[in-house]
Length: 400
Image 1 (cartoon, rainbow, N blue to C red):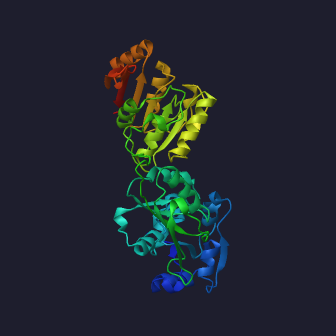
Image 2: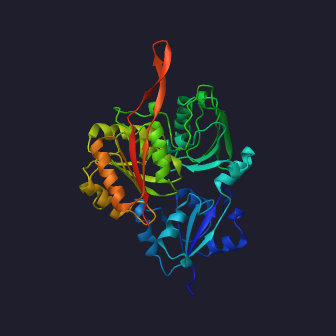
Image 3: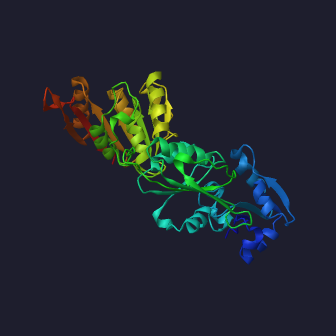
């Protein structure tokens, strides 16, 4: 049976004194200790070879594997498997080689300081990641605990909140929790002006003004929230489309002919860690899609130039595919072949020629064929009448 040789130890602001006796023994017996400057300072009394986090960080696994045969400890903050390097290391190695030693996480400490039930808050990290990704979680009455990326992060988040009508939201920055230098800074988003330590955790209680932007994570955002040249999948059809694509945690979407990115953006907002690759040959539309992704909290949307089906070569296998532009028999065939088992394929058409192709695909491959018609009430003189939008033919299937 493989014995662990690598110990990943969570450590808090109270340093070695806060560790369980058995964990402290592991750290004190280490031949090599790896961690950030702060981690090394928290265990400064231990005599061992010291290694800083590799730069670039991607070289970390090569460094770690080169230490086999030694007693190695990696120091991280709090829980090694909760938004921590420990999770990344664990995915790259045989779990039997690693022993994890958890400490109270920043989320747990912050929840206690705020008096919040951890089960009732959203836990997020923007540490080393785009800050804009927290935007998708701004909801009325939501409580957020956020691991930040530096002293400027609370200012950025206060700006996001204020711009969306959540300027009255309460904010608290908590730093050095559990240590002698613990500090807390309280304020509201619209007047936030504190200078805070670089390493901190931010607590936000979202308070919406009467005119606040409502951005639910279920599909069907208002069309006006997207920059567009008019050739977008409209709100009601988009809601049906994303529902058929079935967003799931960590799943990958190919959005072929992404345009302004509305379908891919709603897909990514609908499930934690959902990913999307958008294919769009027009530079102006790619620019709109990128702006929309930032504004709506999915900055990791991967937007690529290319024409289908050639642009699909070499892409990672998707869990779902939406074809909103560039529809052809060749694109459908290549997309379907790439789709993972239980993958979802959805294609929309508004022209007679594209509709005929979807009818052919339905006859050949099965699935569901529907027509979506939407009409909106608009003024007709002094009265009101229905103004129909172009009907959309939609073909969808699940790959079995």
